[in-house]
Image (tube, rainbow, N blue to C red; front, side, top):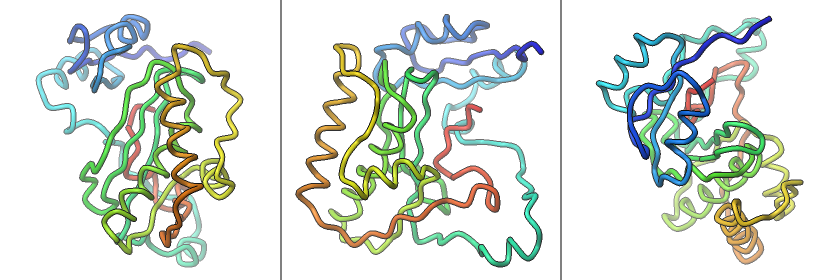
Length: 212
């Protein structure tokens, strides 16, 4: 079964425009600080998006309808909107990686890092969590922190980044952040509660980059 063709809009990159191949898009965003890009199912949609604002498209997804039963949804309940949600995106594993945090209710972006030329989704999820913890502690906030990654939660709990990705010159910026994150965890205490986002009940986490 062949993969569906995608078109890639680049709002910020070495060159901007609409590209029909992922490799062409990747060339424009690699090593470009704050690159902005997203895939679309049709050329028309990609071209229309190019005329608009990146932040009007990022994180946008189709209307979600849970397949869980009424009883299951009732048991899970609603999200706690006194919270921050974090997520990461990686084009390949490893591949170009970035992460961000948003206000869970409004989806207002609170921080974003990347894209980095080489990283993994798990590393990005871990970095996003620690970044969120540091911000909440600095602001003496009582918000909780949502993530959809059990792996990242485990790494934070163990104060380590247990990635199998080997260090090299290309991923040095990512591992510099990893080292800082691990150091922060080992030298700071925090009261923030980290909670698993219930994707099956609530849909994609609000910090999702919407590039699936």
